[in-house]
Image 1: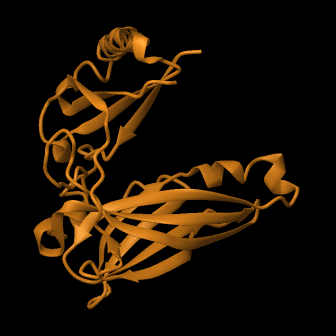
Image 2: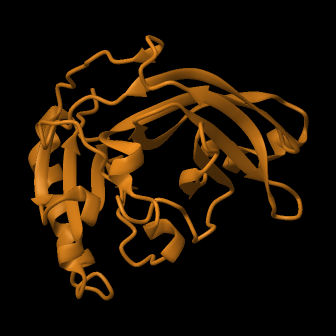
Image 3: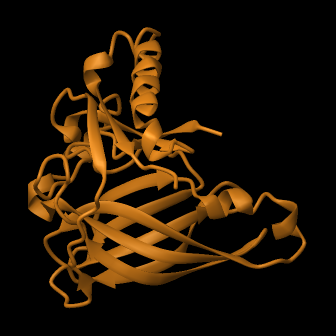
Length: 240
């Protein structure tokens, strides 16, 4: 069965305004590139542990052909308070919060299943992204408790100059289609569309169905009036 998977990534939250966020100057604490922290998330319904896997310096964007941070460079501290988890980045020397973002995860969804309630442990491999720090930082992941209050469940110190930061470059052999390109991803919401179940011979059908979906999406409000605030990309991932 063919289906389309839509991912909204690294969006510049342009409708979020916050005085405190604007006091954090991006160029003071970060470089214009991305750090990725991969971790293992293990536990049960009411128990969870996070352990570090690898820290990466993300390679150049296949589209923009350079390294970049595609999220907001203005709203660096999250004030929306959404998601079951929150990643927080602190300047190590001053303990100042310089970046945060709420998120949800597959592990958090799995915790609601009967399997988790029946005492079966599972481990999920997950990632968080944040701007590449200029200096040492402390990265904290917090989870909501039963009272809906964030409690820290993981913390690590990262030196961006460390030899343990993985800087390998891998080139993915993927075709990326620009469906709508309205400019700098740091100032736009980027939507990525993937296909599932499309064979190599179905790629023309995939492109046509992506275009049909995008036309329908931006013919409806509020997307219609804010169409220029979005970039849309389609990645051809054939099913073999």
